[in-house]
Amino acid sequence: MTTAELVCPAGTPAALRTAVDAGADAVYCGFQNATNARNFPGLNFTPDEMAEGVAYAHRKGAKVLLALNTFPPAGKFGLWQEAADLGAKYGVDAMIVADMGVADWIRRTHPGQRLHLSVQAAASSPEAIRYYVEAFDIKRVVLPRILTVPEIRALAAEIPCEIETFIFGNHGLMVEGRCSLTNYATGLSTNMDGVCSPANDVEYRREADGSMSTRLGAFTIDRFAPDETAGYPTICKGRYRAPCQPDGYYAFEEPISLNLSRLLPDLMAAGVHAFKIEGRQRSRAYVRQVVAAFRAAVDAIRAGREPELANLLALTEGQKETQGAFKTKTWR
Amino acid sequence: MELTLGPIPFHWSAEARRDFYARIADEAPVDTVYLGEVICSKRAPFFEADLPEIADRLERAGKRVVFSSLAEIMLKRERKATEGLCAGEDGREVEANNAAALLHLSGRPHRVGPYMNVYNEETMAFLAGRGATHFALPAELPRASVAVLAARSKALGVGTEVQVFGRASLALSARCYHARAHGRTKDNCQFVCEEDPDGMDLDTMDGKAFLIVNGIQTMSRSYVNLSGAVPDMVTLGVTALRLGPQKQDMVAVAKVFRLLADGEIGPDDAGARLDALELGVPFSDGFWHGEAGYRRIAHAAAAGA
Image 1: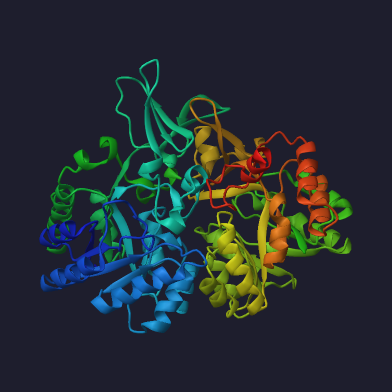
Image 2: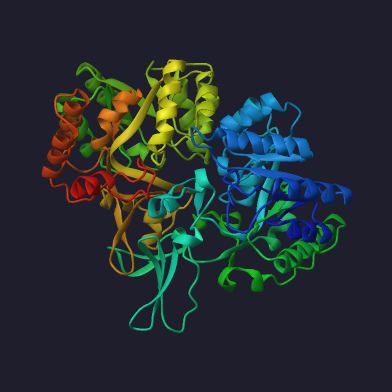
């Protein structure tokens, strides 16, 4: 069984302290720009805040992982170099990278720096992972949320690095790092700008019949009856019409969250080294509850006890949860 | 300027593929044809036995043939197929669309496909140092970035390719959305995607055309049409223009882009000729202009002028 490091979201300095205090082994965070995949207004760290955050985490024995997990468009590479330089200066414990150019540059410029491969790199086979390990000395891969537990176990035996999997939070449907849907609708790119469904392009529109349309740019992503709760318009969780679905359906996935708390013992036995809780955009109260619950569960399993699985349903999107592909491949 | 025809992203029958490539060989003024299944490994057994003959036929007609690798690789059969393709036993070039292919191809000359994330000059230089000779860039890259990459590719001595026609790939998934629409899963899909040779329409709930489903892939509803930008691309040093195959008269499309790339006709004339084909699908060029991908900027600018 692995040490099962708990990797927790820190969207703000306050969330970082909350996560560390609630028992995070590591937190992940980014700067206030396009160099990370949660480039949202009001989130992330100034350079000074990053320096203080690293100091705080290290004092409490926790690690800081710097998210540099977007793809610099040609002509703007300098912004990613600056972010990596700052991270190295502040002593972050690892940098989470997706772009080969960024990985190669860090490896050459900061040779001792530990690198993790972001889920945005979409490395889902032993060969792809080995490529990144050999090319950039990657120490840990964050797996896409598409593999079953037996597949992860088989993968662990074939690759020369640690494995991190998501365990709780948003359940993205598209292969991360390979999705331009937001850019198609809004002109802002998930890969290059670090945004998905940017709030400035979101509109909630009350229709004449009392229904609510949620829109992104020029497109209606979903339509809700007057008594339904309207969700945030994310393209891969919207309802659409197809010739064989004339009344509309969730073409990709329902608004639903990933919750693998029940699979935690199986995943630890399968050789997963670290578990990632998604949610840098979530509140401190959310971070405290989820981190504390998983801290208790991991500790119980490592001590050979049955984990008490807190009811986290209230914290999931639309109060609906799934085990996605991890439980069964029929999800695909 | 090299004119290329990308791999067929849809599930066309073996017969439809043979007929399509026979006509391409005889009539389409393209220099390079990419062959092979890039989207779903379950489709390949239906037509892969025909590929050697199709490749020979295209080469006898003077075309260069490149084999494209799968974009998503997870299962054993996908890993084996990729390894076999990259062994390159028949001597043809391979275009890598996944890092798994790069593991096998590194150190030997190869191409890098549009499903790989080559967004910047550092990534391009890194891959060129490991044998990449030619880069088909991601569909969402704006002109400003293509300009930097084209300049760098000249210095590196490698080619740069931009998709100028056809649906843009917008997303890939592990889940098959064609199967899902029909209440099935990927494992028991019964190849329902074959019913939609140009992809399945997704409309918004208020009836607006939005996206296209093609198995595990989501594509633009519009056809990218960068005919207006081709003279600019020549100036920037882009070396190849890619046409994405659609269930349309691709020979006619290729002829327009051939004349345009050779400077025989101008972009206005080319645009008018493409409009005159009445393909029944809106055009877009938003990504090139750094705007929302579905938009058609050149058209709006011309209308406003």
